[in-house]
Image (cartoon, rainbow, N blue to C red; front, side, top):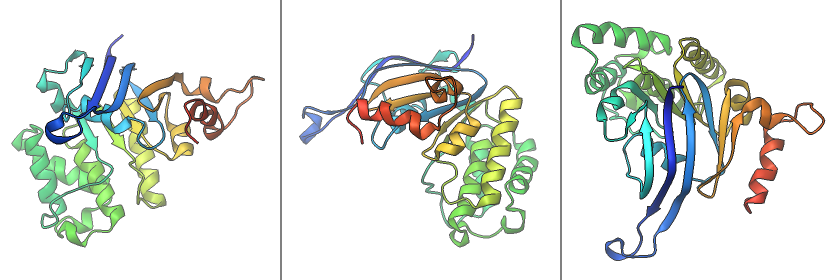
Length: 253
């Protein structure tokens, strides 16, 4: 089986104190997790559980304190795999003086999209996310929902094999959420991998095939969605109901 990501006994401690000589704050405590290629993988947990740290390590935005990580079946040191990943950040910090078209052209160049393909790719994505009539306006004039749509287009500019979506529905209206769900289904149909980090549990339940639950830097559950929401009598419970005992067991209300 091929994997989008494999974490083996990964530890991450953030230094504290002057010159980082303090005791340190543990963010991940021996995390082992395999994310198979293809399908939608949910990453759930309360605030400050370690979800963002896991994503940062996978994107080489931070380095693990211990353990090993493989990305798209290659060592983390192989930076070429980053060109096969798209990432939609929870809070975008796009240069507000750029237009949507200029922003996508910039990120397309950074992602290694060939120049002869870039213009058509930019136009295609801007239309896909519903911004064709605003593509020449500066981002400063965009609403939060429009910036989210642009962030989704930016994450797809390199036609990634692995798409990481961090709270992607934040600020989106109904049509925007429907667009997101459709794009996730298209990636899934193309046998690509999506990692979905979200607190919108009904959406996670609808879209995800498998998931991992992380609490206080430890993986407390991983497996198919159907397993987690199955009750003791063989029926179905909500994802919120299923998560509650996992959180409470680790002392999280």
